[in-house]
Image (cartoon, rainbow, N blue to C red; front, side, top):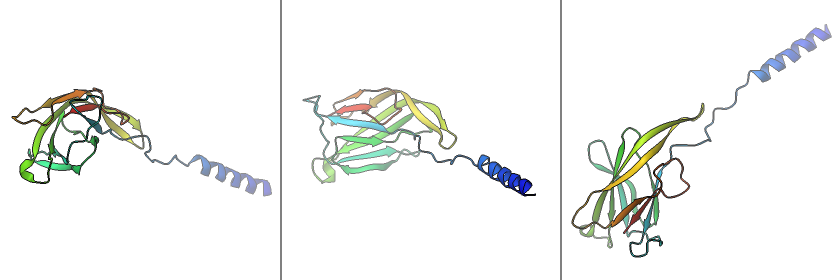
Length: 165
């Protein structure tokens, strides 16, 4: 009788351990952000933060919503749209705090989407390929030049785009 009870308990423990699943926690990755670095137009190797930078993304109804407000950094990370093949950002700089001195430039990032399966827990992420940039010209652009450094956005290790001002 002891052998049967011992065998049943051992069988139940064995079945219990084998029926457990690995936890579905996503730690492998997410869709990467676009990294933009700002450089001095006169010294193209020197990072230069734009004064009082405000970044707004174009919404569905062609209005703009705030992404980054009033920053003074030489690099930013912005999300690209997943449901479209382009994302338009309004980058506004201002040497003073007076709104009449705002200088707004619109930048259109054009790309193709590539879905990548990460894991069962994470599902799919999107990488962006064939990245190109189009600057809307006006009479007073503060952005002087844009260079795409990496046409594939698949990680957040280095800048993908350099903006010279």
